[in-house]
Length: 325
Image 1 (cartoon, rainbow, N blue to C red):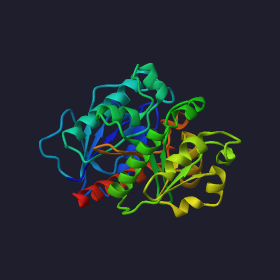
Image 2: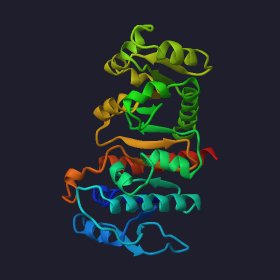
Image 3: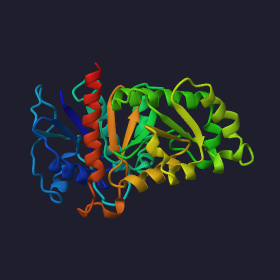
Image 4: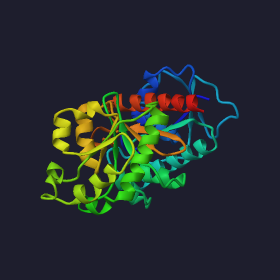
């Protein structure tokens, strides 16, 4: 089918801009693209980024979608105030995501590429999700899922996602670690065609707890759990030494205990080239690994590297899943 839905993200950020820049940069000849965006926002963005592709603005999709032409599926009108998270921008980004999910559930599209959203705008709009990952998991009624970050240099996953640091230790349990490892292992095989994935797991504490002297999570939870796994899983590793010695190059995936433990080294290695991927969903969903960049919104300065990679990885994962069927 080779069909892709792209959401507008927070319309007060760089989302619509990087979508148009991406569509200008990729070969659309064999692809069916649906860009879900308010009509007035699309028109505003065209003033910043001149489209080099053929497009039509539609209120509903035709029965037959032709490749090579972008369909801008309008979702009403939205107010735009560059650089600020608002109730309107939160509602609009949420509406765009729900429409993409609907298209995916109907099998109209093979994958969703989501533009950056603002968690503060979600909060203002009373959308009770901390991010795309949790929203998509609930929409598709998935209990086993993982936030992953992918690039040509590194693949990584998270045990905990959008929670305060003070809550991380309480969230580390044997069952949760086993569940994440199961999801990641299956995704590496299915989505990335890695037959026998080699997975590294990081410790939580400095020096990976130093045998209980600087924390108990490694000795009481992480190590005993990994010890009893029959599979190619190793750890817990001391985080700073692991990345300092580039040990991630020896593994197909690195699992971190909390958000910044993975995101800081990942972005140092892959800034403007990294991709956010949700493993465990029945659909393929990718996203650039950066935020709304409110500070440069509306100025035409946004770097599109990560969005292009998000699109390319969506295509790759879709093709890998097709080959397995």
